[in-house]
Image (cartoon, each protein chain N blue to C red):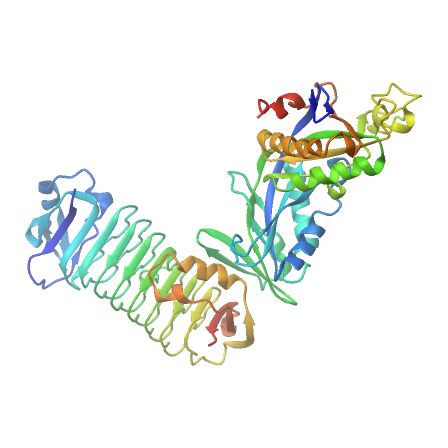
Length: 269
Length: 302
């Protein structure tokens, strides 16, 4: 069986909610049934067949081709299977995803991995603000799973994150790890201002020295044995992070303005 | 049955159901891993007085351990899950947490997971940090030498304790030398420990005593100095008896270990001073597992 492929027919004027097009929702459906599913685009409803050319039959293996930043909520709530996206995607990629794998070969808009609970989300390009954060009004960010970004991430990456792993090979914007409760964020590139702002717990693993605000406290340079376990866990992913081996880090703790016990570990050369 | 002119008694060892766990202890080097593991398995020869029976199962190379440092695997057995959990926690707290550079990890998976560092984390007084790495939860507890790293839980499995055999020889040095040979061979068998000092016990016991307060007392039938005054199991030429007790994860593990140990002794031959191999039992009515020496040595007991 070949992958069930959705090829976008034309440029879209409005964003479309693609949350219906997951392996879970499409399992057992025929091409005709899939084509007649209604998707929400603004205040309109459009049929899948009107937007996409549909080919292939394997609903556990879904592909989006010619994708654009107008396609929101791809892979939302998925619990199994995989989705491969050729092109960019819109907001909320992998929203509340529970298991399975999403691979976006382009860039994404904001709120990728929003409220994600499990599985693997790979983004080859850049991603927007609020990567792995909670949705508007929610006090819970990402709750599990792994996110790997080859490019850059916007502001507030890992905002209110509670569990899981975010690995960003490029740069991140301001407020990375803000209000973070637990989990791990790794950044190989530069970080913006107010990194770990109001951080409660969790770990930020940085390759480059950040410019920190005054309420992050320097605890000195140490060799931490747990990093070996962490680095080992990176080895199964195809990422620059799997090349890390040096367990010697400068440890900052905070945000003390928030009585926080989070840590920023800056890898030493 | 005779092997190399050494008599193997047609008898059996009687063993009991236990609960067991394995913990992997790592440290900066093997020296400190052994310091930690020796402390943890100290005073753990018999459940009668120690709560648990514990021992070092084997040495582990840096490639084999979770954190890439040299380590040792420790097996611990108790008569019930409650005692095992209690003993594991106190021994973790007093022996592993305290030992420089030591870290502890789960050495066995099971449905029943018991606390390894789950409660020990409170030693961190609020500065402890949890990390969930590859599906396993670890605790990092700040201590004066840096950070103490421990996995949150380890597995608890059904196990067997009390496999044994007796070495009957013409002198005390001969009995001990044979026991040492057996232990060296048995140490290479996985999933078992010999919990007594050096793996050997000289004070085998029988159930009951003439004294009301004693549940167990010296096994007079195998005491060479009592040959004339008790219903002795010993022939006139036997001057010393040593016992090797084995705890293991499964029946087969113990049976293999007994076979390896007895065969190593038999290879020494009659000139070693060893005359007979026997086993300790309570008539077969107390323990659910019977290790028949002849069956084990023929391989059919496995």
